Image 1 (cartoon, rainbow, N blue to C red):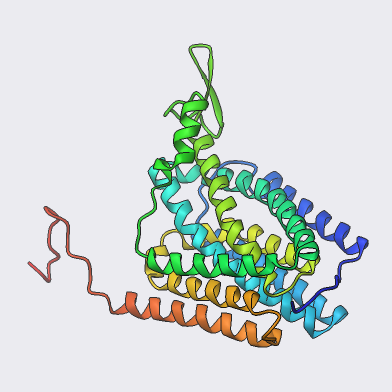
Image 2 (cartoon, helix red, strand yellow):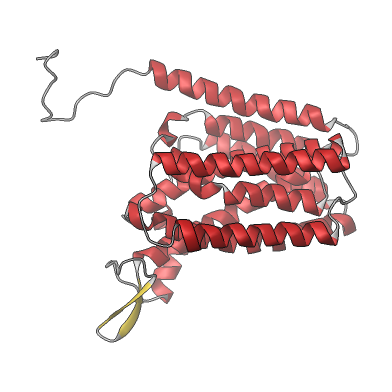
Length: 325
């Protein structure tokens, strides 16, 4: 491991948690108190805010604790941010399959991510404790990430259908629901019965998908550091910026056709790094460079492919343009 100690004092922990609570309260209580469709400019503004805050926090770690923790946080944040983009593919499918209006998508993501913060904290502290006590688990995590990366590469073109998943079938059997929306409410009443609306179904699927992605992302950052403060803060910053990133990229995810190849490469790399931790030592800056190169090349290749792709043929019955007529 690149780091076995901890840089987080009780004051830093309390300060960071207070910051997260304040930002969430500001988000829901002020900026999104009324349901509205999040536009591109708003999403871009919030994405800029969250990335800037993460980089400022990174600079503070670097200044106070040195280059080691600074590079570890930046590498962990890059891993978590890139893997969270894969979440966006699933969120798009969830909202489209359940026909969730754009007006209420932010509400679903807010409560889903709020629950994810608590879940991630539990998983991180459990993972740190397990690795400290059972060192051999590092090899298990490494092998799991390698297999996950290979699976992601093999199934990179497979379409997701979360609405047909075992989780959704179980929920529909156990929770009485209705296909009717009742504004921004997760529950409604019909004929005296309390029923779940499609918003609750979407929230459950968002939660289930985050659990699956956490199983990949948290072991991945353990390849960079075992410091619980760095693991936690890099995770939280990536999650807090996920909603704005969703609204920023939701309409363009199909353009990133090679992103899953890059993510698969990242998972295989960090998995191999974990499996060989007792035999091969890589400087944190090397890990950061490799991960940035894998992600950057996949994004550039995706944009080049999208730019050179022929225009889509008009649908049947669609009138041709004047130039074609």
